[in-house]
Amino acid sequence: MSKQIYLLGVGGSTPIYVDIALDCGYEIAGLYHYNDERTGQMDHGYPILGSFEDLLNSDIGGQNFMLTMGNNEIREKIFERLINKEGNVPTIFHPTAIVSRYATISDCGVIVGPYTEIQADTNISCNTIIGTNAVVGHGTTIMSNCFIGPKALVGASTKLEDNVFVGQASTIVSGKVDVIGKYSLVGAGGIVTKSVPTNVIVAGNPVKVIRRRFEKYIIEE
Image (cartoon, rainbow, N blue to C red; front, side, top):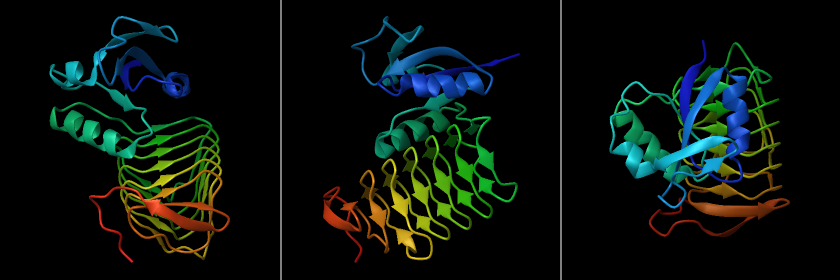
């Protein structure tokens, strides 16, 4: 029997996550949008039941949720509130993903997309999304609330700190990069050949710091 799950976040990527949930044996019970503007509408055949606040002000204990937003900071806040209200945010592996038996992956809120490869001795913390066709190299650590875009390559023995965003088709070169600092963002297609400090946006080949990301976080040199 399929299990019901609610998807939080309605936008262009909604059908991607609907596909993943269905392929993993879940039944989509409904969608929630960030505000009330689309309440009562349908998206890809599923009803938009209300806003995040509508949901979080109700009794959600024991229900299953899938967080689909790419914004790590928003996803982190919603994840924490769901857990505090005893909602379930299960880890979901697409059946086509290749996941090493030697990988250690949180059982709370990790989404591994189609045709993604998670190699041996990786450690992946909660509430992290790893997109379609991405590769996470052996010995790599990915902390909480990260997003790895489609076709990205995270090279071996790299540490991604909390809330790192790696854009699609980016490459973090094995053996060259010790750490990507928390809250930092790697632009799409970027080639990372050295460690990246906290709270910056980097882009290019090789990547360079473009600017600070959030004023309230300090860049660690």
